[in-house]
Image 1 (cartoon, rainbow, N blue to C red):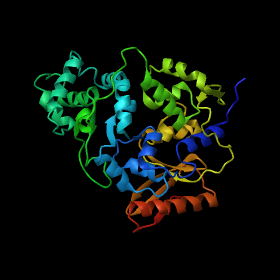
Image 2 (image 1 turned 180 degrees about the horizontal axis):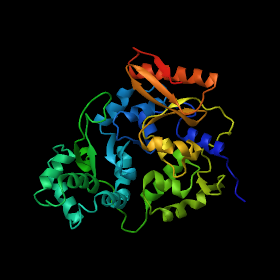
Image 3 (image 1 turned 180 degrees about the vertical axis):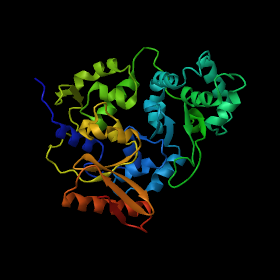
Image 4 (image 1 turned 90 degrees about the vertical axis):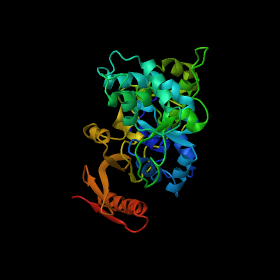
Length: 363
């Protein structure tokens, strides 16, 4: 009989793994690696995610890691832009390749009908071989004469999905503006992505399983698939199952976990936390009920920034006119309101370089 974990127990475990139960004394690179990357299609959001997770976070450190090429912005999990360590980009990119191609066709199947994708990838790789950063539209226009029926938009996006590439700074630097311009990942890092092993083993898949559970567990295999988008991981899960422990959630699903990973007491207090748009603490599960009510699930997909109160999404927030604006999704108790205000003031100070601590909570 497997131990049944309550939704609150799963919530506290998720918060602990996501460094949201208490701010961690981790280096920025170590935090990015522990989290398995941060979703980053909105370039400034990873800075907000790390501010909520790390004690004394300095955004300049993350900017330096980008310019030093120790972290990169690349299409990876779920075909979205993620900020990941250079080591993870190299180790994981090939394992995500089939998923990236499949999801590309899910959007552009009609436009790319009749296009040999391997031929297109080779042409895109040739274009990027001179190390001149190019935008998706530039890539698409350069290939449009060869595949006129596809259209530049589909061609440009196909290249940066089919060919391992990274978005180069100033894109993604703290308070810097810059369009998404791409170079080959191998040129940027000076090393090629790890190839698929010839013996059929799956070290990258096994690493994904372990790393996911460390940052998100206990979790079901469907949650793992929802996080990375990769469907072909049953063999990897099976190969490490003997080293894992198993539980059940309130819905009866089997959950797997690393035996020594933190699973705090469900009654441990959870502090208010302000999350960025598209934070993987919410999006990294198929069943997101451990952290957000089903009725509010669409807010995270729509890119609304969330406020956690007692570990659950209880409000959305924005920053306008040097003020953090909080829109509750339920009534706040007086202590909750005071804690949201205090944390909102800290966030306003971070976002305004200490010139403002204004917070407004809607009625």
